[in-house]
Length: 284
Length: 201
Image (cartoon, rainbow over all chains, first blue to last red; front, top):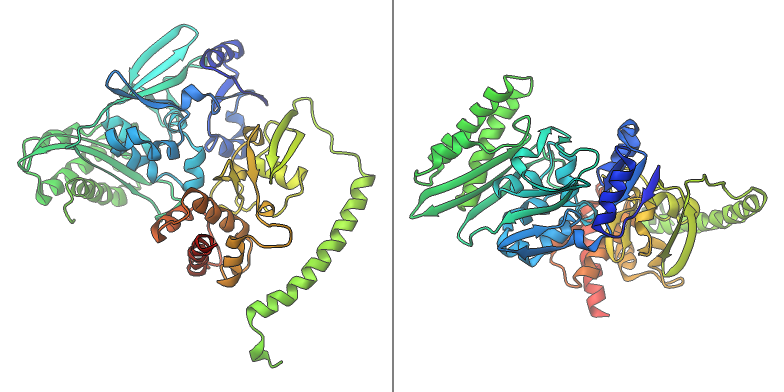
């Protein structure tokens, strides 16, 4: 294995282009170091470490949008004032990842590009409608996150391209939001299932709602069926329970009845209900 | 002394004398064997790593795929850092990288280039224990002790970031360190006591 530490963004693209398919990007390395021990065949000869490029760690507001460098660690994100103020949902999602030690190393870009079904930041980025800036020797392109994933652990990134930036819209201060994860224990657990929600509510009526679960569909998507059902309804536990059933039905429709369905069906319904209740601070 | 009088701490203290003695013997032995054996050969892909370990500047050749824990334990013989799961799930290998807690088994050694690493060996001031270590001894924050270096480093990292952490912050910050003996109540007590100790001094 050969290790490269480029100093700036253009060097990253150059190195990727030079090694033409035999290189891969490493940032915090929390997922890749597991691969080195268990799935060596998946690893490439050249490793390009982007974790020290300052520009790729910055989080700031550009043209009214929040720009997040892919090498920003989960700790950087949870502790960042721009994120806390304008995208608190993302902070909430990144706060439950792994443990303090993992959050100090693992990066948001790595979480997205590794595309593990249990990734906690992805459902939050989906409801926040993130735009991903992808760079390659041919130039830059911007893709919505909903078009980024092909299947678990597989994205549209080609061998010469890489994720250079993540952009999200600012949330409104009145937005109701919540993130919940279901793990085998509270700490240091990989999510079995997770859920992100953002809602706009006026006079108890749901004006709009965006729901995205993780580990429920083959790839991430918003549950438009449940979103349409909730829109215009009064926020109440009964409605949230109904929405939970719709999410569970839609999961079975997409994936079919599988060995895990007897567990997942009530689990996803309850998780939906709870995440919606949490967002509006209902006790259920 | 009747068997009743033998507390666990006294027992461990007595045992400690034996362990220290054994440690000296092993050190002399390994110094001898090291002299005789050739330095471990490094492949062509080995890269120079320059960083600071426990305030000492160090430069050595490392294989690119070596983890920080490998280098600390095998090359620098700092075996206070323990490796248990070896894939970032237990916390025994926790060290400080520029003052933040990281799993040393779960990062490349080369990622520490130019940075400062503190291991459990770096906490002591000569023969004097660090206040966090003292708190763990005083409050019995361990049973078998294998996870303890990692627990101490995790507690230290929290205290560096916030000298007056709340109990919740300590619980959250230390949740990445597992203890198979489940000595958690005393580990927590030790970390809380360490915070109080540091604020007094």
